[in-house]
Length: 284
Image (tube, rainbow, N blue to C red; front, side):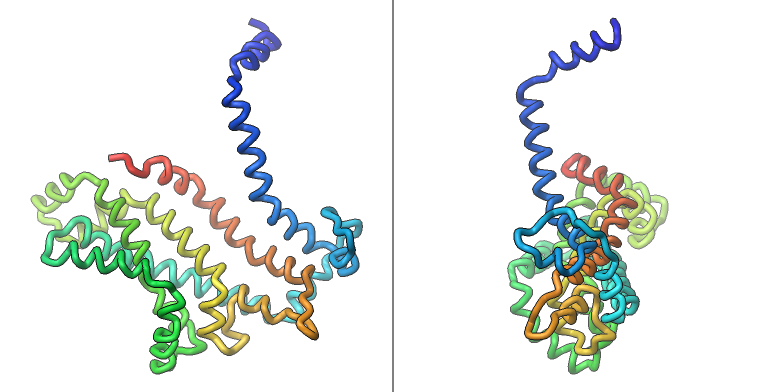
């Protein structure tokens, strides 16, 4: 069969449902990507074009002035570094503590295990704002305001992360635990050498969610830091408001563009494992 004939054959095999699904996927993707496209294009527009009416999507004149303003008016490198320390520190500690707690709840038998699990899940129902003031009072009493410890420690474990990893650990065969115990392995050895290597996709997925949530968080750094030098990139962008509350949209978009780049890079590095975990979720 010739190449042209093969192409015609494949075209005839296309079902209307497949075409409809493809068109719907393209439309949804366009809607999702449109805000990011606007951020990128607006970051390179001069002020006159940003404030022009009617607005235009593509800039007539490309400029780097907005990026220069962000780096000159803010301690930009310090803010980005603080964001990495904050989001990265929370991610590392959360993975350690969440995985340990999840292993105990999923693979060990002890009195009160179900009650403890219910209590942990119940904390997910409590609004974050309800605990903000008591947490701040505790951090202030410990002298941790404007410190990395004050930013990271209250978030070093997460109820969602514990529940998520517990469900993944439950899907792993328990026969491997029994075989390891017969060989004399203790609980921590089983956890470190058997369970964790098989849970890498789940750990990467939880790590990505944790890092993104904390990198993008605005309220937490605003409350627990009063010094601009200890802020994160998201809280630092709030300092760019001009006189009389005027927001320089071009500068804000430039700062937002720089802020999302580490997230895009992090996802590109682990996307294969991330998709693998989604594909295998629920399989025994």
